[in-house]
Image (cartoon, rainbow, N blue to C red):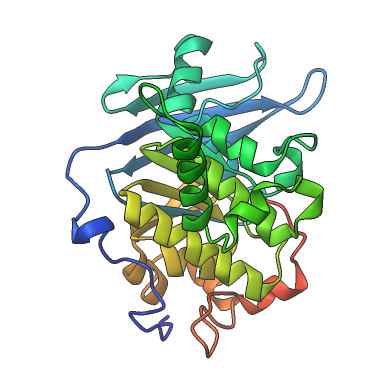
Length: 306
């Protein structure tokens, strides 16, 4: 099977300043297996023997249908699985060679505060409804030493502008409920960027947005991680999102990786029947104007991730 795609549709490209991803792994996942409880006595094998690598400055995608295990994989990498003895995790997740499976909660918090930021699907669930958004971005900012009030304000505005918020001074004064869905998602991106992490994990960040807003938010995210030289792990059921953003892609089904490779190769000449089926269900990986979307997204904009 072959799908016609232009180079401009498929993400790829070099990160900030044209520097290619370095060979050493930022994140390396080996033999990851996750079993989650589904009831008082029942459980499900959500992730099965997953191997995955993210290099510095690289944009990596995970695609698959709902229930494929892609979101659980992302949450495991970020140390965000429920704290329960019934949650069983095996295998290895390392950050720059440091093993994190079995690490104390304090070490995971340190990873999330300095190395990893997450962008979720529903901003209202993660933004403080009683705090102005500018203050929330400010609290995420990492800085060394003292700074004047003006310097802090300028830093906040710069991250908001980078995230695609054109009037940061005005937006900063608003509460989350006063913003549109697209603007709230951009605020989450600004908060993620303000931490200056090495890796941003975005889990279905634009699923609830209409196609036009989705394209703008994704463009802001791509530009931001490139300018700051960050790595990105994009988790999505929408192949067009990953096609437009990612250098490499992992295809998941039933908790396992069934195909992986550079985005162009996987999406133009898929080897596995499951990947071929996913591509057949998508009429287009780009709109005539170059905005990235799958036609099926219009019919399932409220569909959640795995």
